[in-house]
Amino acid sequence: MAEPKTSELMEKIVSLCKRRGFIFQSSEIYGGLNGFWDYGPLGAELKRNIKECWWRSMTQLRDDVVGLDASIIMHPKIWEASGHTSTFSDLMVDCLLTKKRFRADQVEPQTGTAYFYTGAIDGGAGKESKDAFSVLVPAGKPPESARKAAKQFYQARGIENPALLGERTEEVKDSTRYNPENGSLLTEPRPFNLMLKTYVGPVESEDNNAYLRPETAQAIFVQFKNTLDVSRQRVPFGVCQIGKAFRNEINPRNFTFRSREFEQMELEFFIRPDEVVQKLTGSIASLSDAQPSPLVPQPNWGWELWHKYWVEQRIRWYESIGLGRDTLVEYWQEKGELAHYARACVDILFKFPFGTQELEGIAARSDFDLTQHQKFSGKSMEYFDEEAKAKYVPHVIEPSAGVDRLALALICNAYCEDQAPDEKGKLESRVVMKFHPRIAPIKVAVFPLLKNKPELVQKAKAVRDLLRPHMSVFYDEAGAIGRRYRRQDEAGTPFGVTIDFDTLGEKGPELQDTVTLRDRDTMKQERVRIGDLVSMLLEKIR
Ligand code: GAP
Image (cartoon, rainbow, N blue to C red):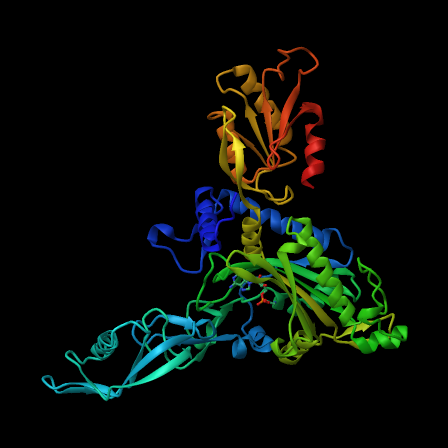
C-alpha cells in the first residue's frame, strides 16, 4: 500500500487515538484546554506499560539505582537554586492585532511589502494615536488589506474612524517580525517564564508563591542525602523518578508532543569527579578505550564513559520496546547548544511524521545541581568516599525522557495500514497498531466463535479467567469473528485466542481443549493446548 503523506498520516493517527480511546482532548465538552490531554482506556494502559517497563529496567533489574516519588510542589527556593526562576524562559512575541502569542524562534520567516504607519487620527472625534504600526503584505495581495489591518489596529486603540498617517512601504525578505497568519507586526521578543505559578495556603501573596515543578529532577537532588542515608548505596549510584511536570508552553503543538502538563521519567546517576577517579585508579579511561558494546562499567570510568554508557543503555531500552535504531537519531549537541551546566548532552530523537524530534536528553550535568543546592540551602551535599578516602560533591549523568512523547512515538511507530481477508476471504484494508507485545495495552483477546452457543461462551470465559491473573485480557463475543479481529488489530492487541467447536472436542479428542492462537501482524493461526497458553504468552509479552 502507498504510504500516506505525513500530514495526512498524522490526521489519521489523531483520529484513531480518539476513536479507539488512546487520547482525548482535555475538557473537550467545554471546548478543550490547549496543551492538556487525557488518556482513554487504551492510552492509560499504554502509558502504564511504558512506565512499568522503564521502572523495571532502571531500578528493579539493577543493583545501583533506587526510586523516589516526590511531591509536585516544592519549596520555591529550589527553583532559585536550580536557575529555573531566573532562566527557565522562552522568548515570546505577541501579535499587535489579535494578541496571539508565539514562541519567537517558531515564527516562520515572511517576505513581501511592509506598510508602515506613524499613527492615525479621527478628525470628527478629535482623537489621535501616535502608536507606530506596520503590516506585511505578501506578493499578490492588494495594498488595501494592509490599510484594513492598520485601521483595525487603531480602532482597537479608540480611534473609531481612523485616517492613517505617514504611510510608507519597504520590501522585506525573510523577516520574523510579522505574524504569518495575518501579516501584523509582532511585539519585540521578551522572555516568558515557563513555570506555572500557584499559591500555597489561603493567602494569595508573594510570600506564598509556589510553582508546579517544571521537571522531576530537582526533587532527586534535594533528597540526595536522605536517599543515600537510607539506601546504603555507594557512588556510583542513581536515583530515578517518574512523575508529572508542568510547563506553561507558549505554543503547545504537534498533538501531545509539546504539552503543558506531561510526565517525565528521569534518572540522576551520581558518579565520582574525574580527579577522584584519577587518584584512585591512576588513569581515566577515554572514549577510545571503551571495550566493544555493551559497555560494562569499570572503576576507571570518568564522566565521558559514564555518559556514553547511559546513551547506549537508553537506546537499547527503546529497541526493547519496539523502536528500532532506524527510527531513532542520536544527536550530540554542539558546544554552543549546551545548557550552562552541561558538559555534554545527547538527544535521542524519533522520526515523527511531523519531523525528527527529541524523545529524551542525556546530559552530563557535572556537580552543578548539588553544588547549587548546597549553596542555597546551607546543607552539605558532600559525600565521603571510603574507598577513595576523599570527600566530594558527586557529578551527575541525567537520562531524562518524556512518557507522553514516548507514547506518541510508539503510537506513530505502531500505526500501519495493510490488507486482510474479510469473512468471505476477500481482501480489505485494515488499520493495525503493531505495538511491541511488551507495551501493547491489551495482550490477548479471547473470542468464542459464536455467542449463541453456551458451551463455547462458557469455555471462552474459562480461558479468559485462566489468562487474566497473568496479563491484560479482553473478552469479546459481539459480532462476526473477522470484525472482532479488526477491532483488536486497531487496539494493537498482539494475540487473539478463539474457542471453536474443535475446542469442545467435536472433531475428536485430539483437538479437544485446544484453541487457535492468532498473531496480529502475520494473521497466522496456530492450534495450541489451553494448558500451554499461559507459559507461551508470558514468554512473548515479557
Ligand atoms: N531534567 C532535564 C529536563 O527536564 P528537558 O529536555 O527539558 O530536560 C526532558 O525535558 C524530556 O521531557 C524531553 O526530552 C521530553 O521528552 C519531555 N518534555 C519536555 N518538555 C515537554 C513538553 N512540553 N511536553 C511533553 N514532553 C516534554
